[in-house]
Each structure stands twice: as C-alpha cells, then as structure tokens.
Image (cartoon, rainbow over all chains, first blue to last red):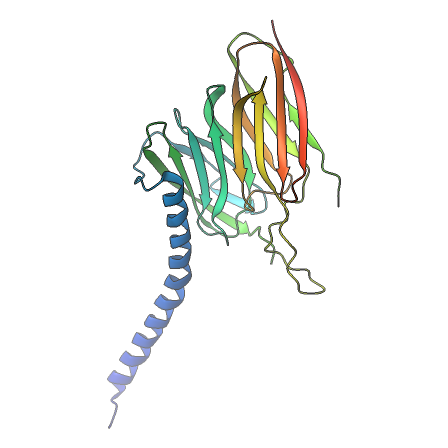
Length: 144
Length: 109
C-alpha cells in the first residue's frame, strides 16, 4: 500500500491531536469526578443552583502555599470550599449557628496550580447554591 | 515538632447583640500527606488540624471541618453575635486526637 504525502500528514496531525486530548482530559475528568462526588455528598443529592454566594480571592496568587480566601453566603447553614485542581479537592466546610454574626468566613488555603475554587452553600431548607472563581497560581503549594 | 500554640483575637467588650469579628490562628505544620521526604523518598504521614469549633457559654457558634488543602498555621476568621457576657471557647482537634483549646471572656457593657 502506498501512502501519499497528504495522507501521512493527516495521520500525524490526527494522531497528535488525539494524544493531546487524551493527556488533557484524563486527569481533568478524574478531578471533576472527585469534586462532583464531594458536592453530592455535601448537598445530599440536591442540585446546586446559583444564588447569593460569593468567594473573595486574589486573581493571581504568587505563592500557592497561603492564598487568602473568603466566602460568604447570607442565610446559609454551612458552606463547603473545594479546590478543583488540588490532589484532594476538599478544603474546608464551615458550619454556622444562631450565634453566627454573618454566614461568612476567611481562611488561607493551599493551591497546587492555577485552578477554580468552588464554594457550595447549603441552605436551612435543604437547597444548595454554588459559585466558582478561578485563581492563577505562580508557585504551587502542595510540596513535591 | 514545633510547639502548637493557639492565638485568638477577640474584643474584650461588646454591646448587646453586637456582631464582632473573631480571628484565630494556631501554629501547626498541617502536614498534607502529599509531601515526600527528600532523603528517603518516603511519604511524610498526614498530620493536620481536622476540626475547629467555637462555642459561647456552651452553645455552638462556628465549626469548620478542615482538610489538607488548608495552609500551615491555619487561620480562620468568622463573625459572631454576642448576646450576653460570657466566655468564648475555641477547640482545635488534631489528627492524632489531641485537642488544643483556649478561652476568652467578653463583657457586655
């Protein structure tokens, strides 16, 4: 069988494209699953909608070891923070009570790489709301 | 291991039902369980503060379940309503089961 120049080029390009897609989707898919699992476990299956929930974070974090994060969801019973690109996505879950002055909290977190921070708030009626915010990280913070 | 030392910032005085900001910090390495020892190549076991709880006169105020993605020397800030004079109690639970605690009094004027 003879392979023309055009066919050979097409094969090479196609093969390379397939390889790149594979390489990029596989880990992203795995992390996505972990995040989804965590969300389902937290909300008890309720599908999170959008609502009054905000994440405060720097747009660019120079040092991934300590990234200041604040999260606020007025009226929430608890808020879960996830870092989708970390080796384990769970960051922290905050629980509020009648004595909480406001349903918000601030902390400092580790980010392994540039990624999305996800916050999900569980309301007292069982519904859930979520939001996302991307943070660019210059130096990752999960050791190596 | 470095000594674990909790620090909190709580106002001494407040008016009735005033909402105050409470800042807490505890010195702790928060070993994530992901790092490897550079010499032996073995994974350093996870050792983090996994729970933080604040209560006021025995009533829960704020709780946090903490995972390895929280930075070393975990800092937590939250808002609290002060209904009356009393003491705020803070508790940090370590992976090894030890509990570090601290109490601060607030007087309502």
